[in-house]
Each structure stands twice: as C-alpha cells, then as structure tokens.
Image (cartoon, rainbow, N blue to C red; front, side, top):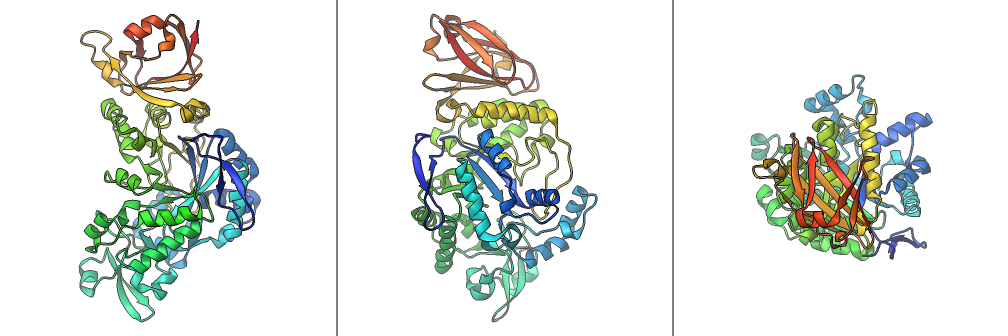
Length: 511
C-alpha cells in the first residue's frame, strides 16, 4: 500500500476528511490519559479536558514520526469501580509504595472497568474527543482507543437492564469461589454473577463477566464497536483472546459463536480504514490475525529479549512474514514493567534496536523515552515525579530518527545470516542481523545480543557492492567504515562488537 494514497476516514456528520494510507510498518505512542490530564491540570491550575491537549504536543508526536496515538482510558468509568479500587488491600499497598504522598484522591478506578463507551465527563465528553481526533488528522496521525470485550464495570446499565448479558453463578459457586463470583443487586432481586477473569487467575473484582454464549448480547457488543468506528480510527482490544469460543468454553463451560469476524466486519462497514489491535497471549496471535485483526501483541518477542539469549530471538524473526508484519512490538506498556527497570542501559538499547527496527507495528509507551522506572497502576490518576534519564532520551532520539527513514517503513526486510569468524569461534551465534532495502537506499542492523564480546562474518546479499567500495555510516553514532565490496560479497562483513553492541549502518555505495 502506497504511503501517499489517500483514504477517507470517519469524521463528524456532514464533514469529510482524508488521510494518507497507514504505512506498512507504523509507529504507535501510548498515552495514559488520566496521568497526562493530571499533568496538564497542574500546569493550567484547573481541570484539563481533551480540548486542552496542546497543539505543540501533537506536533511533536507528528515530527517524531508517530502514525497512531493511543489514548488509554478515555471512557466513562463509575463509582463502583473506584470504590473497589479503594478497598482492595493489595492494590492499596501498591499505590502507597509508588506514591509516598498517596491520598484517596489519586484513585480514579481502573480504566478497564468501563461503565459506558462515552467519553468521561472529566475529559470533556464526546465532542472534545471528536475535536482531538480532527486535530490528529490535520497532522497526519490517527486516534486509537480502548475496547474491553470481556467485562464491564459493576454499575454498567446492562447489569440492571440486561442481566442475561452476564455470566451467572450459584450460591454454591459463590461459597466455593468467592474470588470469582459476587452477589449483585439486580432489578429483579439479588443474583450471583461472575467477575471478569481469564482462566488462569482469580477474577477482577471491579468487573463483571460478559456472556458471549448469548447471541443478543453479541449483537449489542458488535453495535458498540460499530459506534466506536465513528469516533476514532481504531481500537486496542483488551485480552482479545478471552472471547474466542474455545477459550470462553474452557473458562465458563459455555460454547459461544465466534464474535470477532462479524463484529470486525460491522465496524469496517462503518469505517473501512478502522484498525484492530489485539492484546493476546497463549500463542493465539495467528488465530486472531486470521479472524481479522490488523495487529496482535508480540509478547513472545518481549519475553525472549528480556531473557537475553540471541538464538531464540533470531529464530523468532524466522516466522511467516505476514505474521510478523501484523505483530505489535514493544518493550513496555501499561501492563509490563518499565523497560528502564527491566533492562540495564546497554541491554535496553540492544533490545530496542531489535524491537523497533524489525517488521511490524512499533509500539512506544509514555515515559519510556524518558527512562522512567516506575510502573503506574491503571487505578491511579497520577504517577510519581521522576527525573529524565538523559542517556535513555538521547538513545531514543537517535532511534526515532532512524524510524523516520522511508526504507524502514516502505522497504523490504530480510534476516541476514552470520558465520564463524574462525574455527572454534562460538560467539558468532550471539548476532542478530537484518537489512532494509529500498529503491535507492539500504540499511543493515547488526546486534550482538549477548553479555560477551562477539565476532562473526555477516553475509550481505547486495549485488550493487560488486566492484565498488561500501561506506558504512552508523546512524546511531558518528562511526563510519569503508569496506571493499567484493570482499564483503565473497567472505562477508567482519564484525567484532562489545557486549550488547549494535550498529545501524546506512550502506553508501561509492563507485
């Protein structure tokens, strides 16, 4: 798909706008809306709404090369979810550990305990969101929001109006599994309902589980998605695999009809460019891609990078190219620990080069570029004050400059092979290398993903090197190297890198 093609996007009634088609390997930035709004409110000296998001911030995101801004947690939550967030002792300990000056006012309730898919009254309601979306469109960016298919807040109107939309339990189950069931005061009297959960953990006590075995409910939920397709440009679907028929049946003993294919079709009938990104685990990524998702979380890559062994990471990049193109690559998000707390700086940089310069959607998180180390629970409206790590910031500035090069979005990606530098040289197996090639420019990414110095010969299949000199300009530093093109083609490019060392070479052919 050409990056200069123009496609219609959903806009307010009576108005039509156009945006460039999404690049094949886009960049996404996640914003914790509550935390961001609390920062703006302090700066303004009054409560901020989405209308107060500065144009200067949006322009900075556009200059940095982001295609999507994901505003986490814009939807209306309720008093019930906040009350539970204030009563859970385990959560309270987490809040107090994070915020030395914690008070009850810091608790907003989980943004995943949604009462209504309308913009929270604190943020200016739906009209403010539509204006924000239009401001993003003016700058060539798209708006991504949350869709939580598995559960709702305990005070969602459906609890009273359509209690059959929820999974019910029995008094016996409530007695045996109080971590998974609760008694609810419904319109026709008290009933036992299930907390929202996945099959491997206790329920989330600030939510109630939706029943996908009810066809009327499925239609109502698909209608919610269709509505969102008129308000934004895509959704990140929380725990999207939980509503797959086989997973839902394993969890609840009820076999539903598939939900995602027809729901996605309805949303795209409203907005043809609407995209779906799935939070998904348990090796169900391919299943959801086949059901219509544009992108699926690549938690497996994150785990392998965190473990720090090169071969599993390299083998991960041997997966089907279309699967990889639809993978959302990240080093942190609101669910994972901060990257700067998980990786030391040198390993962090090596992992980031691999994560963001491979194929797929490149997914960055608020605070990641500043090197923040404190993960903020989604129940809180503010985080701690942290100093900016200037070394991390400088690294990400260089990396984002690389991501603004057209070839890493429009070019052809390929994994490259390495060989031993000499007999008995075992460290060659520590390298992960790949190339991006376009019509006029080629890049080579080389990473020694190991805690030891390593050497290898890298095979580079660039025929244009024949009979010429290759100038290798490192885009992540000031280093440059001139090498004989024929020697590279016949023997390979010799690499000798320190622990967690890397280069992003711009290959310039000098005739």
